[in-house]
Image 1 (tube, one colour):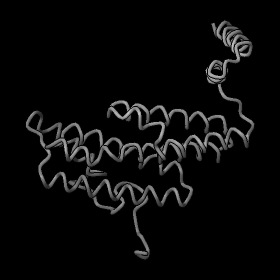
Image 2 (tube, helix red, strand yellow; image 1 turned 135 degrees about the vertical axis):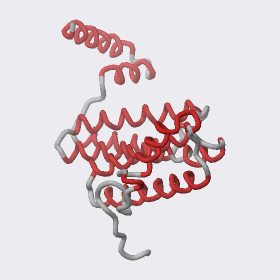
Image 3 (cartoon, helix red, strand yellow; image 1 turned 180 degrees about the horizontal axis):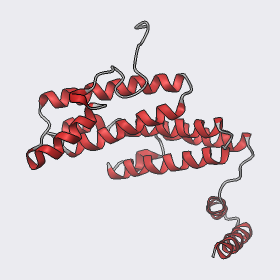
Length: 208
């Protein structure tokens, strides 16, 4: 709807180099080192952080549409690092919360891109593992924000689980033995649970 979007493929999407640095985040890191304990985020710095968040979000969406998944992962990692830094130095909790509310969404994009990159590389098992890692990261965020009860109902969590199930079914990937064991116990399939425990024990001995 906004017409053609033009962005640089590396560094900041707008091509600017804040004080000679690749990104504003890199510039802030140098300032924090130089200024030491006196470093703080004033209104202008907060505004530039918001600008960089938005630019990297737009480019991340474009990378996903272009199926450039590794690039989408890199931009998501940049956003998460900038979020860590800005939250740590936030002038007020409310400003930090405005960004932190999007952390699960950025992790979702990173996880989705990581899984699809592995599928493109013909590594479906690694794709499933990438989704498991992403789900663990998202759960940690919900736990830290004391929103544990909302994790199971979250739409992004549901989408990742659907993606994992679709991959597992399509490529006929069995769940890890520990996951199968937990499911067997949950369904009171005790004979199968005992068999799975034996398989896990034998595998552990081989690793030793």
